[in-house]
Image (cartoon, rainbow, N blue to C red; front, side):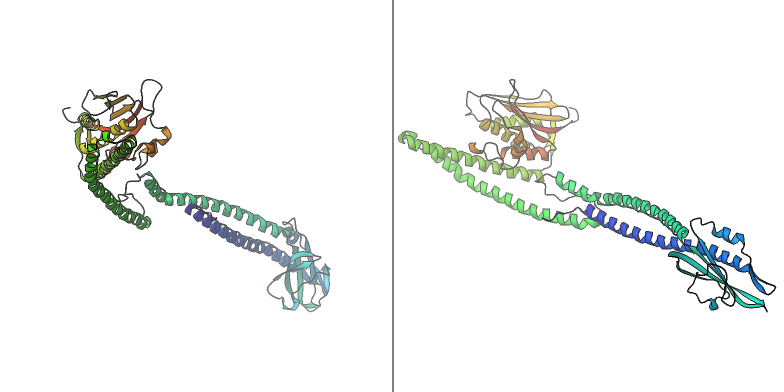
Length: 463
């Protein structure tokens, strides 16, 4: 199984690798620079000491003498970790003083004007060697005398390490700060992507209108592709809804005729088994007719949501008309049905036809699947909201199914002939009006299960 890393993680890893590689290059360069600086500093001291020793060479009474000046060794003594070795050679190649076994790869005959530096080993230790020549013009000792001076390299290695460590610490701190800044910059740069994802997640599944979010220029093709896809999908959905509405409309006429023909049948002439079959046919016909009407209602609600201009309406009046339509004359006389409107006018900005259909579907659902002996429809003032409450004394809907039953063709009464469109229609109408369809659980007291259509109120002038 391939693990997919986020874009942020990929960018962070790439930046970390680049910074690590850059830090390694810079630390290596710092080491070379530190070593060069340490060698240059100590080489200057070494050459200066050798020149001072060479200045102490003189010919007296026909003999070459050496005046080893203390200042020369004091300069070299500043590097307390190192040891000093020297050898002084007369023009004949004879060692006058010093370490006779101190050798150099440099040809002494070539050392005249300029000191020559080289690296080597002496007694198993790495040393830096300088050779300085001194011209002698005395007839008794003419030619070139040479001073060979060697110094171990511990001090210059320590200085190189110290300089490199300081530079490395600075580089590491700068790289860490740069990585933090880059991580923050990457998060900031990717924020529009998260905002776009959030806008998509917050969208209602039925909302296929184009996205209108502010995004950087690089994300515009992506948003354009999403909008193009949603536009094509919306066209297909519209065509499908139109087909369903047309099909439902065509089915309604033969269904009405079929229902009428079934009502004309004389049950008295049928035996018990046939009457049961006829009852089941009538029940299924009624369910099909109700489904057809709900499909037409749903198609009408969607159409009006896209085409009808909202206007101020009195929710008391809309609920009263919905109550008259939804409660049939043939309702069971044992069921107590009541309607109570608000004491004040509750004005909402909406489409009265869609609102009436929503309330009708909620009441019809309560009558068919909830009410046992009591149904109450109330219009309530809830401050900034106006509520239409439909309460019955039935068992209600479990709270874990509340979000599901507002979706199309989802129902908790699948075995009772419910198509799952009533709450979906009401929920879509409420959302189109800036409200919501809510549920109130059945309590232990006399109150039952309540469905609430909550809509934002408006205040009309003079009211």
